[in-house]
Image (cartoon, rainbow over all chains, first blue to last red; front, top):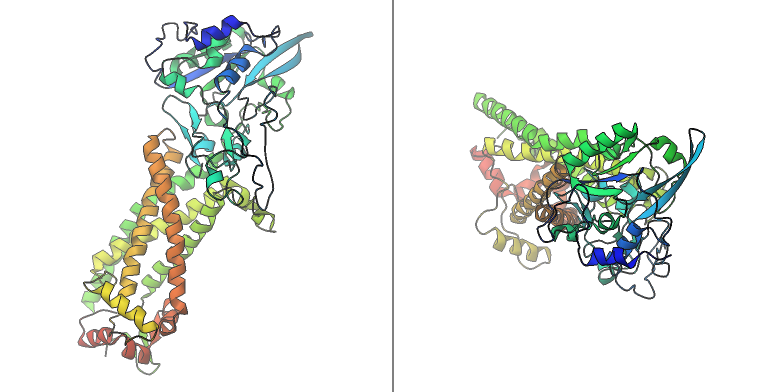
Length: 321
Length: 228
């Protein structure tokens, strides 16, 4: 069954389908501030009556022209000949691809002796201190004040460093597009990385992220960080449940609330390309670089102080000579 | 004669122990920064560098960043020490002087057999120019690197304009650093400069060489107006 036409009219006309957190959102004033999203797994039903879940379909529709036409043939990188081409598999929607920034994982669990199904929307978590953005060699990936982590497709060389350092390997590469084609396509770069940008542009125009706006069960909402955190905690208490995303990778601006533990949900997932797992409490790996980074910031002062002391001592010695 | 000259061994002190230490700390940490900076590009895996036994770590961006930071501590600390220490001592030997550019051209011409080299002070005019050039490159790398480090630690959502500016300054000056390094090493290839090489390892150069090529330095040492 196709997603109802009515849902999409709502999205594209920017009509007032508002989340709980943004019930008074205006259609023109930018949605600003430190934002967070909440995904309530007790509410998401995966839109099982639809061919595609509404959020997935809305995301695909919004981003359908995101990837430009792919150069044919795609230049072969040297010496490692890895090419990632999804341009002929645009219809894939059960994993992350450069054409699909959101998918729904279906988790079948036995809870209290009863078989239950949970639907887990998966996309970029928009981490608080995202390694994918901070150590991008060209700063093509950046975290904005509103919490969105956004890849500038015009600057990205598609080296996939962001995917390697992301604990969930979220960004996906399309070879044969982007700035690298105009420089040294065989020797440097390999396309452009794509992922959810929290509909950063839409937020700037006062619109909600498409997946949130379209969700028929309001399983996804967006709001001020503090309010969303309080709401997540309240819902967790009410359902005697669990939160994912608050501490994972050093904290994220995506909070999942679930009546079953994420240990159990994670057991239904097998991490593979385009399909992240959900390891509870996963550490921010870049944390191990923080101590030396702090010393770097301190090193000019130490050098200067030692320089003054040594220079003064030497001067004194020379005077004595 | 001054305490810098050893007539018996035919040697003259060109660099103090502190200067040698400064040079080598900056040079070696600079090389580590250069290599780990390359590894911060998606480079080691693509070019099979990480497949070389013992270099598996080179494709791990977190490990290479940690090594980059460790080298940066030495590089930044020593650079600041260098500037402050020599300012405090009033050292001016490597600061470019009026006429250095013209004199450098004359020196370069002389390498190709066109004319005679001018009489030199302790440092050659092109050394003074190269020094200030390298200092500028290092300054830009340090400033942009500090901004990037601060962003990594405390402000991932820093203004995108500042982040982009710091990143591209770091990347462009990374290339200039490499070119300057090549030019620095290339200077050794030029035959008249070779007697200086031992100086950067031992601190001393041959006295007979210094008398011929650096007479101004010797004259000032002998007059006692200069300290090494």
